[in-house]
Length: 183
Image 1 (cartoon, rainbow, N blue to C red):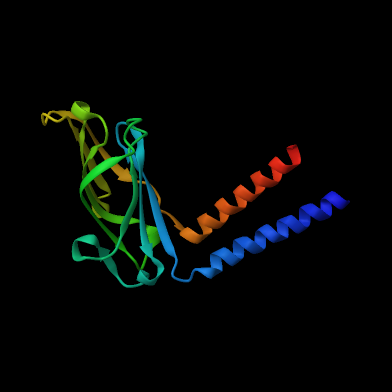
Image 2: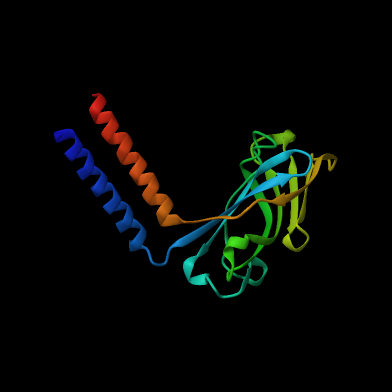
């Protein structure tokens, strides 16, 4: 009975911390993540962008016009295990802030993978939601086409950053509690 009481009190404390964290940040950041699904290769990777909550319901946001949209991650590691760190030359993205659950409407990406010297590859991507079509081209340093695939984006996953932080904190607390019990 004593251990059940401890468990309930620790659970209530964790839930309180989680809600305190998520309500504390009104100017929260919102992450929008979508899978990149190739027509030939299947899932190629994912793209994740971030906007401020105060940008919601302000219409179309476009980095080409100076709107603040941050690229959190573009990952092609489902296609190539090393395709997760890029030296980015061009990134443009468009979203409709009135309907962020619709996801990315347009993006263009141009970058090189990092750390391979003469084996560095260049990646070019283009996507247009109006046609539900995009393409990926991969070139070696000599400009030879290494890979090509057309793709579409999966369903948008919208997560506010403080909620993610709260869940991470809760998981770390659970691991700490578990470790104390084992020792």
